[in-house]
Length: 454
Ligand code: UD1
Ligand code: MG
Image (cartoon, rainbow, N blue to C red):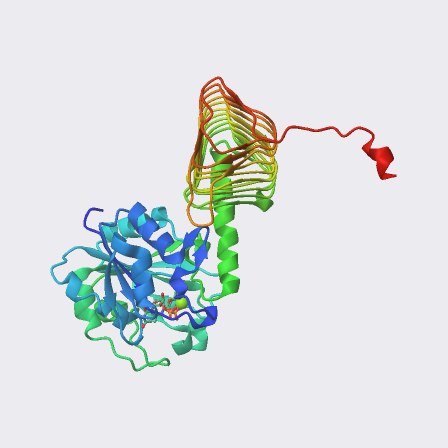
């Protein structure tokens, strides 16, 4: 499909969303609706995407960046008028233009490819993707000719009683031959119930010129759902989640309870990984094989190796290598790299730190801005003191260092390889290799103090 171009309509305000955010930027399944549409177009082989913006255009452009070209529709005068705005960008285009809507996040690349292939096979000038809707209210209806080709599309508001009984609806997704599309758009009028320039009128105009107009029906009407309200957004979320869960299970991932497992569309998970209930895996996360995650885990944009276990954990924008264990009530914050077989116990927070192979942070620690070697043992309650109220400083802990419980490592500071720190120390100076540092007041025992007090 090397010469496929898409025009994505995204100028509408989406009044029913009751939102300051343009409708197409509402998120579902981990990314905004327009991104889902562009990803489906990409998967179908589109080489160029033109997005028609209007309401909140600046915000939409920012969100999409260089994934598309943009044209502005100043006033929303209808879908035909919206497509017309792309004319100047498509002047020399001789191939097929696919028109999509930015508010249909359930589309798949497969479905778009089917439409495109059917359009080419039929040798049609326009082909519309249709679906049989259990409740077609509100949609444009497909009126066929005796030979199966399309006579016209009538909008619900313009339809007769008889036409309203038709259950085959216009999905709002079409393939057009570029030249025919723009010449016919010039003839579309707005003498209809909504006073709008309807894109579907192009089909009837071309048909009257003797051109072949085709329809391809999909059984999977869900995939063509257009989202107009928060309630429909929630329905789409459910459908996307179900789809993702089924896909993962088919690939060999165990989901103990799909109903309480929330995995974003772009997440990848390796075989034989087991996901316990109440687990969220979001954004661009990549999870390896043989992991056990959950219950109650939330992962955002994390890269996790094989054989990692974690429960009651929140990790984001971090890299976690093979065999790491994440205990309960753990917070792994951005720019953290936990290397192979690191063991994190209960109530531990790690931020912007590298933690070397086999190192243990078993209980109640805060590790921030720290470069820690391999096989370090951080005693219970040990923390890095990384912030002086103005600036953050780094702590370095060498390989095999043993830090006693409840120590404060006041950064910038270095504990060298194989060094020891006595429990309860507040370390402010370098601890050389193999030394034991003790930095706490000596204990005094006052004899018979209790008796005197009485
Ligand atoms: C449209 C179709 C209808 C089809 C339905 C499928 C028309 C006239 N009707 O109706 O046959 O069954 O989609 O969902 O096309 N938009 C603009 N500029 C405009 C108007 C709309 O960019 O001036 C965009 C909207 O943001 C939206 C898309 O076009 O993404 C569809 O517009 P909408 O108003 O939702 O059309 P429907 O009434 O749903
Ligand atoms: Mg609509």
